[in-house]
Image (cartoon, rainbow, N blue to C red; front, side):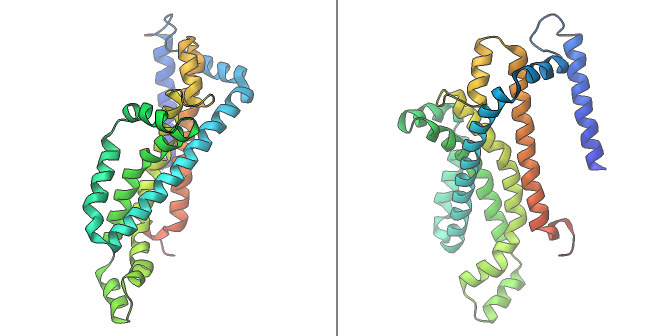
Length: 249
């Protein structure tokens, strides 16, 4: 039922897009019809979208892995050394509050090139995953922790057999949000001019050259890829944590 509702929502969104392009924004050129955008995408073809999409995906995936890996590592460290919680939380909040457009130029000057794109993608996902992992690790069943202690297990044993398992659902919830965020961070990094290829670079050039249908096509591709990233992580979560949906293992 949810899939049908989602499909109907997409159809309604495209219908509204076409209606606005054909009525309110007709003749202005700022909002092309969906058909005009698809025609532009077909004319550009894979020769245009392939290299740009590959560049952005490569940086986005690297940032996704680095940012989430660091967030999960910090969450585990905080659990083992509770005194570090205040520092880790403050760093996470700072990373979340600093606008990427503000820190981007600084990172570009310091690191330059592809490192800026990866860095912005990584910092885009750090806060969400860290908070999800911390909440999950702390939601461990008290009886399970006591049982491990009774059988002689220490802090690492409780972490391995109880807390990590309990943390998986909320951690995957953070990872699902992180997938589109990593792509957004990578596009912003490219948009700042730190790379010579990618969806962000192409968006900037298309805007400067007033290639409206191409600009909309690039935005559409970016949205589809972001949604696909979310769906892939959600599928992995369904396979790894079936109990979180009330299913039996």
